[in-house]
Length: 215
Image (cartoon, one colour):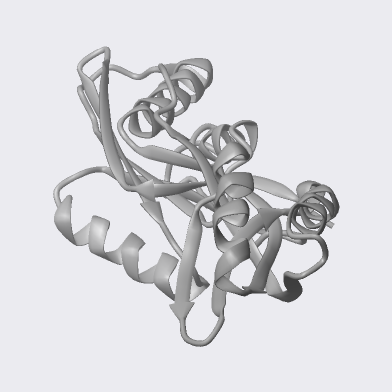
């Protein structure tokens, strides 16, 4: 089972010039094939006067779906290089469309591969990327005397509280990475002398390490 992948949380656009041809890469977060098709058509309408709108996407986590198109460029010179950039960055649920305005000079197969690769990387460099790690949603119930200790343990581990309900007791909801769950439960149990009730409420993906990808 996949326990970690990267995703785009803010779309980006990048552009390069290769022998007077313009290559414009649009990086777009997607959730379904229908959304991918809609975004591709949107880009084609936006750049209606361009010669090519080549694209690739990877969708899903454990058994990802991969699709690509050369859109009239020589086979293997556009869509596949875009796809390889997505694979290389371990991204999921992302579409990259690279639009080409022909500059009058043929680039050859090697030149096209380099251009579509470079444009894709330029688009990602202007996007925000997050690492998503598989984990669990935990619910912690405690009396008010144990609240301070729980907050201290969570704070020392850098775990944010997702939600808190204050009634006769306190209910706290947190997200914890799979590999940290057992140790955290042990610490919370020991820290509250076994008074805290801790239950797994579901599975989730946790966002960490938001950053841009350098050129």
